[in-house]
Length: 329
View 1 (cartoon, rainbow, N blue to C red):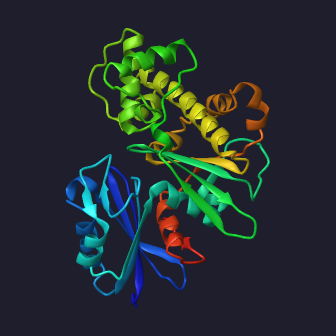
View 2 (cartoon, rainbow, N blue to C red; view 1 turned 120 degrees about the horizontal axis):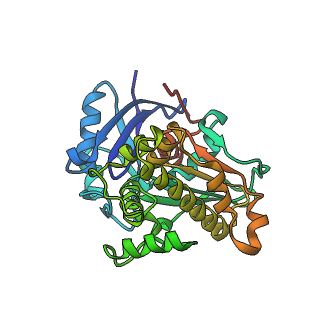
View 3 (cartoon, rainbow, N blue to C red; view 1 turned 30 degrees about the vertical axis):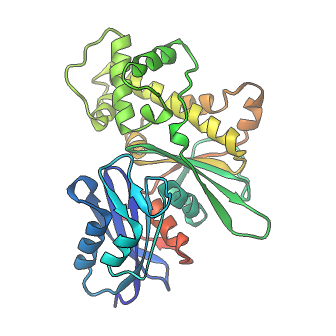
């Protein structure tokens, strides 16, 4: 019953999501999540997945990955994986292996998402054909755009916007930048807007407040500490984080001319949103805090992505599968 299905994947620095997609119906299903640290390469993950779905015939795969795609060799910036696309295709017995940037894939997914997979956080009117900006906070900070040309499909614009230089807007953020500069030659937005960045921000905020952390907190523990009001430094960290998130969103909208909206997602944002800690007002205030262009930015709709499957949907779209759908539990 699984004959001639397509493998779709979404590889981050922490986890690798793999699923199968029926190219006729567009249904994405059979989800598996593999910790990246437990495998030597993408090829190994694909082989394990094929073994779990032994009744299927898989000759095509489309994989989104948190990395720029520059030729055949991929060396991930946020994990230990290094592999050849062509060698992986051959070793996995595939006729076609398409690799694309993970946020390029999310961009391609946007036209396929339902209202239940998005949460609008402001009242700006939607512009269906306007250029869209999107970014995600996970192990790293990924960003992309989606542009529609006249009489043509949507065109994704891949980039590495998370690595642009962090720009503080007040004294506290300037002091945070100075602390992070003690450990990094270049402090990018990713050094703050990411899982490791949230942890670094917590340590810097604690230091500025003269507080010595009781122990080394993981990013998820910082969110829990803020949600339970058990650690004022966790709460303050999330406040600062949401403000800087808004600044980055505004920068990306200005760069792309994103009249069609800005879309924010990623594993860290999902955790913050589920905990009820996404500071909408702080985020929106900083999004529009751009001087003469503030009014223009105020007309850009802003959304949170509320599905973990956007990368898989975009990977399916990239390889030409129409009418894509996902049944979320």
